Length: 217
Image (tube, rainbow, N blue to C red; front, side, top):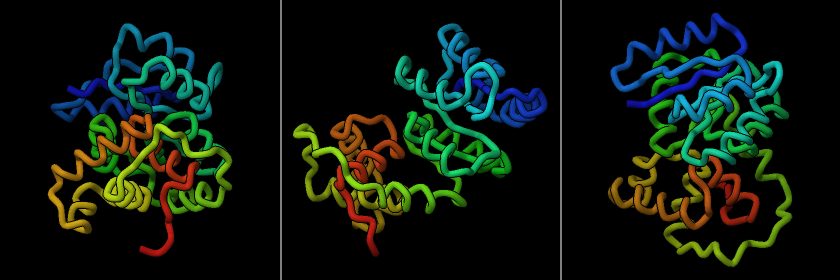
């Protein structure tokens, strides 16, 4: 059972999300809170697997809440669900440790898929802003030397490059002529070597250190 905590300052949004998710046999809404501070206070007792996080909220916004959650509770995923697609909010949310970023007009089926996938270790970014995110990060000059602890094999670098291009495990397997099980093992190894917990953070780390080339395939 996937335990979901909803964090949004609008009652109607919380109620709507709870109604949508309550129809799924493998998802349980364990609580709703109305700002980031309430989310941090509720997490120890509610023990969610994932937090659906709004960004603009009173008391503590979603950026600060996400930073605190990912720092204090590394096993909990944060999936941003917001109306904002402005660059500043998008990049701050991803850098703060969010595993994904969806807009509130995301279709129901895609939202549920994103929740399940995020808990499983995948990352979801709304298709309308994926290109903007990767292009901007790719243009950011590399500022830090590659840590000596990051030693990727040639195959791991290939897998990481395809992750950065938005490929799913199935698409990576097809491209590299390997089984999905093998790709899952490679992905797990890459995440471990990069010291991150999900694919979005892996891409940010890879681009930060210049580990991949996002030129034409």
